[in-house]
Length: 441
Image 1 (cartoon, helix red, strand yellow):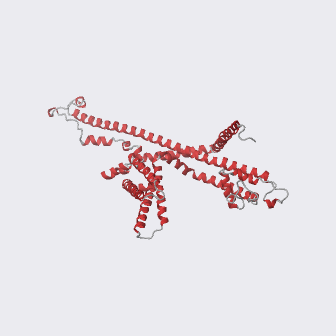
Image 2 (cartoon, rainbow, N blue to C red):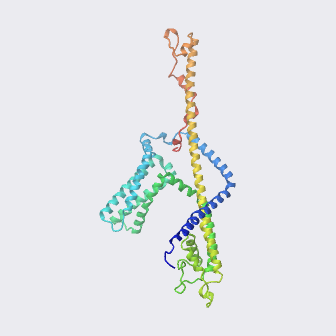
Image 3 (cartoon, rainbow, N blue to C red):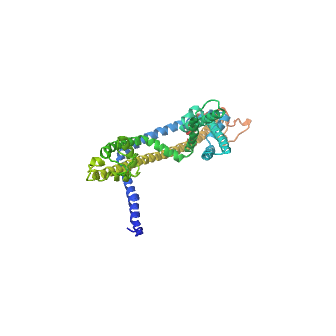
């Protein structure tokens, strides 16, 4: 054969890869996901009913919260200012910027770094830790202990602060040689500073939604994991029986099998199947199992069976199709399903907020109309009393105030009668609060 005799034959392989690897395999994925959704269609009616009941409960809960005073209504001026600072969007932006700078400073640390850089990084760590401590302290004051620990992200922030303070304390103890500290503990505390990056998830709403989706999908993914374990168990036991006697040495070299990928025992067979499921040189392992038994030697000495040339392709191809293309795509379908549910839930939250805003607007209009009616009633009563005294009621109703000789009294605008009438006609929806306040109650 002549090297590169016909380079245009590359088009054959490129077209084959494009058609098979991209189109056919993605169509396979689409078929798996579509069948998964079809299998769940009979559950959609029950899920829709439960979702509607959950929506009604959440709506009632939000209405009840909207009729209550916010928890910060009894705060003093100083604590109210701290609460406004902690709930401000600008504070989140500042903390995000500080976290990004902290990540950059942590990436500057390297082996055999100069003493000046080590000192600068040390003081930078002190500054960042102090900033996080101040942030956590302000939030504790603003929200109180119960509301602060109710939020899991606040719990993460406090854990990061405690780990940072503990790391600085241990480093100072080691420098001053006050107590014998294991250096491994110091290294572990330094590594745990990476957890500060997780604070960025709190600021990124989209990433939080994806993380919540993954957490909600864990039960179903766990069931699929058990199915994976069952599949691996069956194929590992079968692989030990079929390929456990294969020999790989200088006389009989192997392309994929080695001491790290073998079917000699169940544990190594399990690990080898995990390698096959990732697509790492699984065709080389299959080639090693397709070896022919030499006619001049017994099959047991060579480590092969006469029927492996027919059994091995069925074994590996069926495992790869089941593990890589079916089960993994079912996991993708489960995650897509939960992401769609989370998007629907977010849309329902937005609709509920809009409905509450509409109720607030209608409630404010009713309050205004009720107040006008109360004032008009008080004015009409005063005018009727003046008409009984002999003056024309129309003049008084029109707002004409006569002198003392006319015997007409001016309408009482700020007296007790008017205020009591106004209080008696106050609409109950006047105590509703906006959804932004409801979320903080």
